[in-house]
Image 1 (cartoon, rainbow, N blue to C red):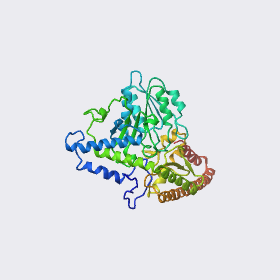
Image 2 (cartoon, rainbow, N blue to C red):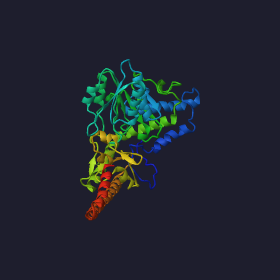
Image 3 (tube, one colour):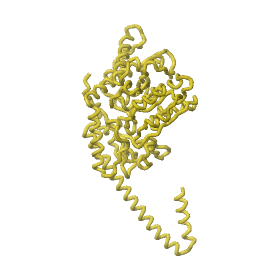
Image 4 (cartoon, rainbow, N blue to C red):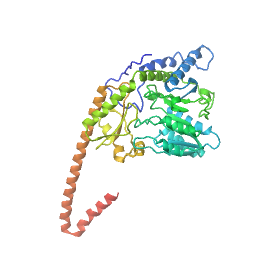
Length: 434
């Protein structure tokens, strides 16, 4: 299968730089899955002719997924999402672990699917959870893991690449430390698989999560590599599908989509796709830095994913900046609660102050990103940032002038009597303390 990209029809759509959130579905993936939504509808467990083709397609999809991540096809468990795969890995490992192993170690910047599963294990099963810190680049220090590990640890979970900054963790070293204490190692490779080489065996990842909609397949399909010999407690009980770990008749169309996407990703990596995207990411960073000298700060450095650029632009907030460029689709790490923006917990955990974290934008490139896209995006962001800086300067000057004018008026009023002067002073004090 050739890996010449076919750009999905987008017309006059905004430039898409949000591939870490979700990728467009590759037209070749759509073509591969469509037959299994029509004539290939049979249950793969059926012994008759209608089950034969879906069963063969399912087996082929497992081979394709396994080949991408350095696994055996029999180790591939299909799930409905990356979150489900993470839940199965952590909950399954802890509840199937030996007596006395009721501890999980993860990091503070993990995906919520891991963090919330850890919290639930603690709340529902009394499992002890240790959260490792990260440094200014978002990296876990292996020495911190070594100090935290003990014989009670059932599983260590550290993602391959952070979804906000693209930071690549030293997974192989962390896994080696976990294994030295008899613990399993789980790696959420949702952001990494298909973008950089991922080999579960070489990394030492007993459990590894792969997600379809991060690699040009539809949403609703993912996989968990479960190393042969690893015991997990199932999340979904029933007919015994997926080696007894995930009951329910398989969605063959989505499995084929994920397998095809894995095949395409492997071919693209072999053809230097990561280098192409990395060069575009660096061009985007360079264009922004040149257009806004001294105002652009990189959040998270090397090593990182080739297509991820997380930057803060001084004098802006990320959500306002992106709102000012509707022809660009990108993300911030901040969240909005009741009209108030809160900075990204990932960036705050890295030690960034609140203003810089709130100014962050994540620009994530992908298979169809072009130099023209990058240059236009940089120009739009730089223009919006300059406008924001001008507006801020104008507002500051206006406020200063108003304050100066107000001070003169107060002084004049004060000369007329002490009672008149007291009220503005009290009001100002209440405002400052609110």
